Length: 372
View (cartoon, rainbow, N blue to C red):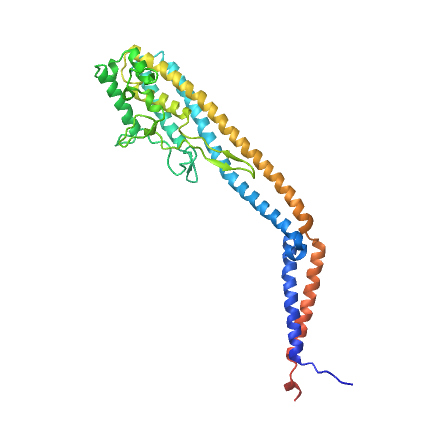
């Protein structure tokens, strides 16, 4: 009978291969033990794995939309807070204007109105320039540019303030007046409310109201229109808020509500305490009341628009959550592993590895030297 000899080198190589295989299996089974899912769906599911890889990709896409919607929600919340604050400011100014109708020009009452309007104008500009992580929420697609310029920027004069001074100077000159306190009630009314479209005989460079209407910027400011105030884009931001829906998610500072608010506050800030004639002062208060009241109504509509956007994003988030739950169930149905079975396999593999390590150690100790 022939006896085949087996070298210790051959035995060692066999055991090393066994250890490598067991270690690879241990890595996979430990992954399954920690994640609760198959370590290699391609190896386990075969041809059906493509479907589940697609599900994972869709789930990741939904996760991305969720993260994006968090940013959108924060921006909309900031915009809504700013607009509602403007509404409260408009209501406070209206109270002062109504009181102002019973006061006289250049009295303590008119000085108080001017002070309140000036403070409200600064607050309005700050609100219009609200930002979230460097993104101006009322800038439209010009998210990196501050949408509304400061009205008073000492020691220099802003383009918006220069525009007011220019149209006033032009109007006074055209009517042979040297000061605003010489204006009649009719003239004050015309100056504050008339535009070339409503009064063709009035040039645009003599119209206060034209300063708060959209228009192109000139090469050398002031442009005598809303571009002296705003650098916002008319185009609002849009975002993909669900797999199938891309929606408008911002309001531009070129919105009429912002223009009306700036118009009402500016006329009070500039002229309420200018020692006007009684008729001119009454015309100013009545016009301001109408403009600020219009601004307040427009701001209410703007807040409602933002609220609709918030609701749309919230509904999309709810839909995304439902889709993720469905995907999770489908994925887990095929890829989830039995934790008890996996734990048992971990124990068995650990035992086999320990035996393999022990045998390898014993074989490495075999040497003819020990028997000589």
